[in-house]
Image 1 (spheres, rainbow, N blue to C red):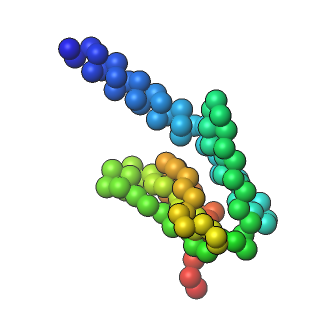
Image 2: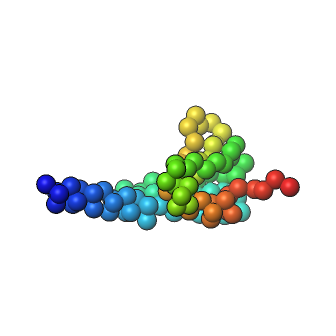
Length: 100
């Protein structure tokens, strides 16, 4: 019984890793490009002038290991676009503007 459970956990971890490894976040001077997927690919381009807010969502485990989900609120959409799991430190350096 332990072997099927271990195989199921290993398969779940592999699928989670594939989902994480297949996503990219690209920043240009005018827009953000989110790309996700392996077999079927989804790409979203968000112009900076449409972005209303940028946030980071983390679970307790995510806070311990430094990973979270980037949320980008866009004008005209009720739900934010989500990208993650991704390293929070890198996201903060590139996406969040410090208050001076």
